[in-house]
Length: 284
Image (tube, rainbow, N blue to C red; front, side):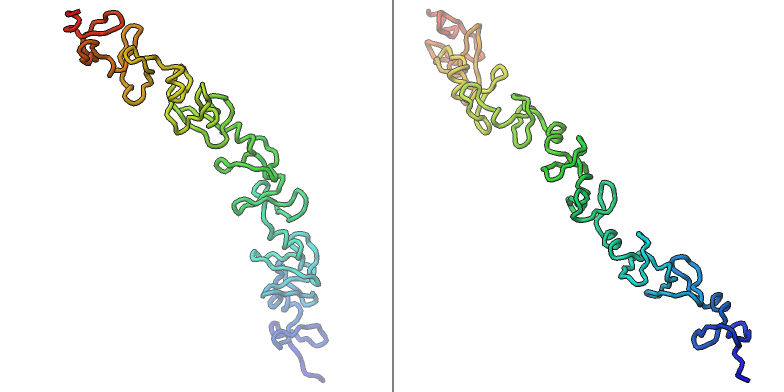
């Protein structure tokens, strides 16, 4: 009669019964599944003595449970990737999962697949059809675009929504421009009314809502001094003027005709085309 073999745990006689060797100790099938079997990482059930078991990095699966977490393809005999979150994936699904996600729809961007291909900007990615203008909602694609905060605008919508309009031509100013009296101007619109010379950085004067360079103002607009007959421009020594009735003088020309005394801020007498101090007027 052969030696008796008992289960290491329950001490049942295993003679003629199926049993499992666990660490060189005989264990009946019931005790193995209850006390020794590994738990499947997928279904969370014990992996029985009759089941085919797969393991990877101290984790265990039933053969039928070892499937891709995305497409459920069996991976017992296929290449696979174990992700940091514990998921097992086939090579194709793993590559898709590792791809960039669209900032618009948050779906995976598959490189090089038609409109699914991506657009990148400042380390972020979008599907081509998701990278749209905030205003008109049309795909920006390869067009130039501008940003405002976190939003993107095609050039046309940005111009309509944010560009300032020129005070002269009323068209949007897309770049550059000049500010004068809190109004924006195109450089090419901010010119002398008479000769069309650009006035940016030059001396000019305004008259009846028009701008003139110094030369054109002198010849076309400025009044003539009743004393020296030269234009009164408001520049240089001609900054201060004296007005009386319909006549105007440079302040430095407003002098007594006889004694040349400056009459600015003094009493004076006009006789014909000339002005006199009160003393000289008495001697006329």
